[in-house]
Image 1 (tube, rainbow, N blue to C red):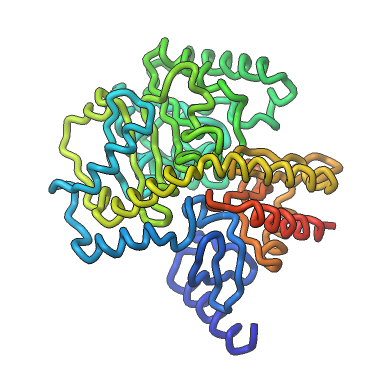
Image 2 (cartoon, helix red, strand yellow):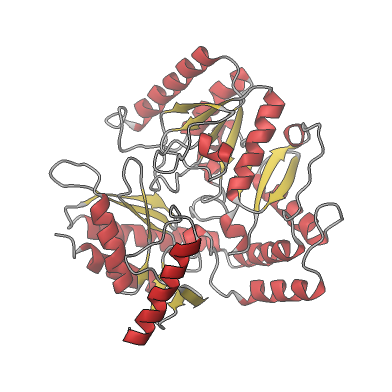
Amino acid sequence: MNDRTLHAHRHLHDRHRAVLPEWLSLYYDEPIEITHGEGRHVWDAEGNRYLDFFGGILTTLTAHALPEVTKAVTEQAGRILHTSTLYLDRPMVELAERVASLSGIPEARVFFTTSGTEANDTALLLATAYRRTHQILAMRNSYHGRSFSAVSVTGNRTWATTGHSGLRTLYVHGAVRGRGPFAHLSDADFTAACVADLEDLIGQTGDVAALIAEPIQGVGGFTSPPDGLYAAFREVLNRHGILWISDEVQTGWGRTGEHFWGWQAHAASGPPDILTFAKGIGNGMSIGGVVARAEVMNCLTAHSISTFGGSPVTMAAGLANLSYLLEHDLQGNARRVGGLLIERLRAIGAGIDRVREVRGRGLMIGVELADPATGEADPQAAAAVLEAARERGLLIGKGGGHDTSVLRVAPPLSLTVAEAEEGAALLEQALRTLR
């Protein structure tokens, strides 16, 4: 970076800090401006090329600048940009039909929003209206968005910015397998202990509207329970009439490889009552939404519309992106290439003492770093590896529970074997900079 470029870069950073909130985080000591992308790569304003293993926070699902999506957006924008839900919208109806069919929820109805936060907010509105109670169960270490209500059901203190809420939220064990009071148990005993905790909690609280849970926690560091835990929870919830909301904002659309939705790893007791989605379906366009069985979705008695949810342009993008995803079996690619990548990262981690665990499923992989002497989370190491990876041309994310100590690896689902090998080698180099 020459002096002139560096000056322009720092000038933009200064402008950012002058007009945007202090709490609006930026990655890297010297934040980068991403100007364009193609496939699994992006470029910054200085012309540096990066292999993108984070996809704008798991949002670039298929590929950067996917021609099919670009064409759909351009053609729709040339016809009309906006109408609102007060008018019939053919792309919205068509995408709703496809999402309803794929959801696994019987008699499904779909409501589109502009983000995952708004989708979860809507799900909470539906659940509390349907059940006529403001009590919610959520998972420890969870994250569900940045709205007032979504923050109030977030079990990760790093993101829980206020304790004031109209909801009463109670937190359940089970979403973090490798830490906590039940970590030493076998999978079967872990599930039994968490179910007993749930039963005890419900017995002390009275009427509860819903349990909201991410099948794999995203911001929490790609943690998850043993398969089947939420099915066991569902048996308890059903006895009490409590709804199950599956937050699929990060786990949806085949990212986990083995399943199209994260809830399908817990399918023994049937699908969730409410499913929320966002991020990947739009491949960068602002789409979120809620799927619920008709009885639940239709329970609202007041008028409700969405000005921007279901926009013709975003719906056109979603249709094109979903079609590409299904036609090219990107779920299968996530399973195959993701399986190779996670095994490669586990082999690397076995030789680096600060790597506590490599976990995940498909192309949703977490590398947890810890102090090898104490086992305590090591957020400084995670920040250092994030920087070292960028310097070598690899973009990754980070997350975690009590501390941000998990490297988050989530490339677009069209990742090739060669790119997986390249990214693993770059991440190994970054990890080996740790002292």
